[in-house]
Length: 201
Length: 166
Image (cartoon, rainbow over all chains, first blue to last red; front, side, top):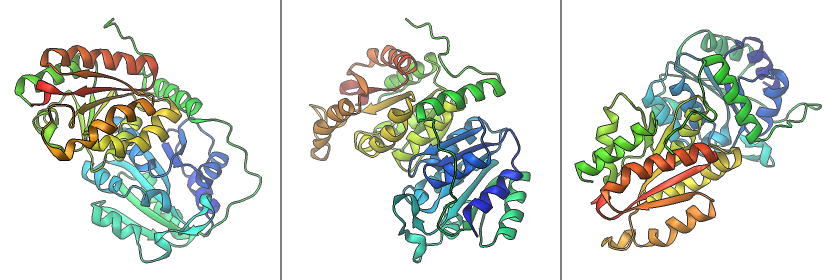
């Protein structure tokens, strides 16, 4: 399965207000091309995608949150699986595009190229619904079930290395992404995040 | 921590608008942890490593919460990576409360190195901090630090030493 094809299928079933957190590298570049949206929070640094997504899911329990993670990215911070599972979120779908490599870092193999099975790790961490899918049809069915449903779901999508050519350059840095995302949440949730009234001085 | 100090921390957190707390269970904050975990004014997310705590707080802030992260001095070293990758790179605020183990007067030899690392590390990360040693200083220090982290859009730390953590 090609990662771009899997993400393309996912983009087609994504509700407009679903929040998507993506890790830095090819996943964010591809997702930005397929589903450009203010509801995206992309280019989250290595190992931190799942933690940031958990914080959003806890803060906004009525909003669906989808994490687009990489195998190397998640392996950097496996404890985040346990902390998320114990929180028992009802609105979190964690998808790992597992190419068994550090593609953005030169393509050297990750632990999932060896003996490590992230779906089993997630299950052991306490995630109630954890599966591995290996072809596009299976991915589409599993992702549809997750995006239509609720709960805490973990999907390992086994994908090939390699991206597609001609993707648009991501021109936003984290500072601009922060303002764009926070303003989007302010508008859609009717709350104030940036520069709240603060009168202690 | 004495109950008076715990109350001063909770009072400071509430008066400064903090509504989301993440922490790694730690002996110095155990009584405080017990209190905030059952206080419905706080969304409480315990974590297994400080790196998750920083990330959870970053996400919570972006989604409208006012987070505080309670970490030990050793945990600050762990947190330095996400504090750099998230808070410094994205300009994200975060209130850090740190029991300043290893400060002068701390008799436990294992804590000594954290006198060497804590304040210099905060300086390297451009995280301004204040040090409180008296219980009466806790609440205003937290309120001021929270005001500054919101205004500056970068983390601010309160280091607790002396009678505040005894």
